[in-house]
Amino acid sequence: MNPRWQQTLASRGATPDEAGLAVFPAPPSGAAAFLADLGHLVLISIEGRDAADFLQNQLTSDVSRLADGQWQWSGYCNAKGRLLATLRLMRRGDRFVAEVPRTLAVDLAARLSRYVLRSQVKIAVLEDETIGIGLAGLDLPVELGVPSPGEHQLAAVPGGFIVRTGEDRWHCYLSVDAAIAAWDRLAPRAAPTTTGDWMRFDVADGIPWILPATRELFVPQMVDLERIGGVSFSKGCYPGQEIVARSQYLGEVKRRLHIAQAAAALDPGAPVGGAGQTAGNVVASAPAGDGGFRVLAVIDTETAARGGVSAMTSGMRLEALRRVHAPSAA
Image 1 (cartoon, rainbow, N blue to C red):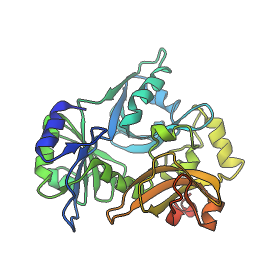
Image 2 (image 1 turned 45 degrees about the horizontal axis):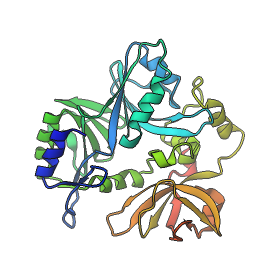
Image 3 (image 1 turned 90 degrees about the vertical axis):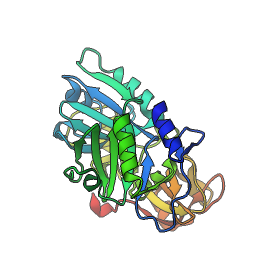
């Protein structure tokens, strides 16, 4: 992480947690807009003459259909069709940028680099030179005085670019100087919030970030990746493609993504189930803002329908359990 940015956050009231992520005092009650350091995410740059063809042969989404200034969800699988990573893939001219959890970035970049061979492709983790800032509850383009990008679009701003990640929710990736200026411009209008608390927005939206503890646990359909546009079933081969296609066409996927309420956080990968039988695993959990937690978990659909699902290690119940992306959305 960039030392100058860390010092800036500290001077604005943040303290680092054990992972080095920013922790701020609790925002005021009733706060409607939030500002966060996206230290849990990082960008990987994939560029060069052959970058588009290279990614088309590695990822689950149809990279050939990704236009300049747009983004799409995608996945990277092993040969058995199990997800090694999920990523937000963005295109800026001939350069692609993948937003991924920081804890996966170095390994993912190294894995992809093994298959570059003679292709004209350069892969690099943009760990120190690009700073991520999240904003929710305000119209960021209005605040920065730039045109607003549409859904699944990004736009250039001085010092970097901004990404629309949801309704009134934005990710900014900027140079250090631009990030400091943007933070100080936005902080009077939005309450700084702890990086870990920011994850509640992705959990609420059913965004299935794969983390080290959940690598190789799920095929893409288990985390509904195809329902959010992250899988193409008409493109050519990629690692694990035959198994992903077979799961889609030759048999119903029995485990699917669910969201629930819980009294405490659950670790990614933690087993969940009912009647003493394991029926799935936690994908992520985050504070809900009401004293409880929201949990994303891949759970056997029949077990979830019967109810009584709980964490296998603690026995804590998962309440208000429901599918994240309704089957009718397929």
